Every structure is written in structure tokens, then in C-alpha cells.
Image (cartoon, rainbow, N blue to C red; front, side, top):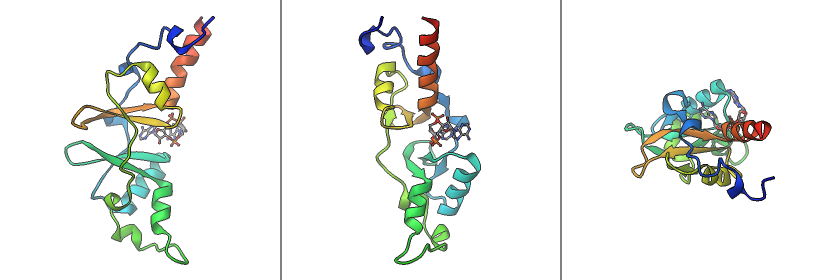
Length: 146
Ligand code: 2BA
């Protein structure tokens, strides 16, 4: 019987095998108009996606709710803001991140409050994301096997 997370043999394992690689992650660039970001969010079906710069460094997160907030004027939604504002004007800059060699236990703690973590190195070079789904799937698999 497991008593603490430390007893879980997964706890010290690294997260590398769970990472969804950057080429499979929907993302936008900072200078994209909001309209483009909204299209990518709607077409991909995701609530929030990473914002990268031209050198594939992580710069922020953009979400459907941030875009809706930015479109809200004093009384009405102002649709023209979709073309006048860029992702850079609206994105959240405080992004939950993790290093590719971080232990599973660290990822698990962060995923309590965030549905995904961006995987970056010391220079913010983006290598992919770690999702709540893949992390929970691994724990579930482990618990069913033991
Ligand atoms: P959400 O978009 O809010 O998605 C919540 C959960 O809904 C996802 O959890 C997944 O289980 C399901 N889901 C949503 N859209 C999906 C789709 N197009 N295909 C398959 N399943 C879908 P997680 O998989 O744990 O993902 C957590 C969060 O990570 C997502 O939150 C999204 O913000 C981000 N994400 C996941 N995969 C992504 C990708 N390939 N590109 C960009 N962002 C991604």
C-alpha cells in the first residue's frame, strides 16, 4: 500500500517520455493578429495554447477567454479589435513551465493547478508540453498494474 507520493516508484522518473513534442503542439506567434490566434484556438479545439517567438522561444499563453476579454468594449464586443490587436497585446506572460529533465513528482504538483506545462530549457527554448491527461494516464496505468 502506498502512503506518500515518495512511495510511488514513478515519483523520481523523468517526464521526457510524456512530452508532446513541439511539432505536434498548436501554437501562435507574438506578432500574429488576434484573429489568427482565435482561428487556431477554434480549429484545434484547445482552450489555451503557447505563444512562441520566431526562434521558437516560449513567450506566453493565449486563450479564448483572454481574447474575449480583450474584445469587450464599454458596452459591446468590438470585433475590429481582432485585427487591430496582436497576440503580444493580450497574452498571459506568466506561463507554467518545467525543464525536460524534471522529475515526475514536480510535474504532478504543478499539474494540480494547470492543465498543461510548457517544457523549456534555461533559455526558454520550447520543446513541447506536458498535459494533465498524459500524466494522469500514466498514473492510472501504474495503479491498474499494481
Ligand atoms: P483544454 O483545451 O482545456 O482541453 C482539456 C482536455 O480536453 C484535454 O486535456 C483533452 O483531454 C481534451 N481535449 C481538448 N481538445 C482536444 C483535442 N483537440 N483533441 C483531443 N483531446 C482534446 P489534456 O490533453 O490534458 O490537455 C490539457 C491542455 O493542454 C488543453 O486544455 C490545452 O490547453 C493544452 N493542449 C493539449 N494538447 C495540445 C496541443 N496538441 N496543442 C496545443 N495545446 C494543447
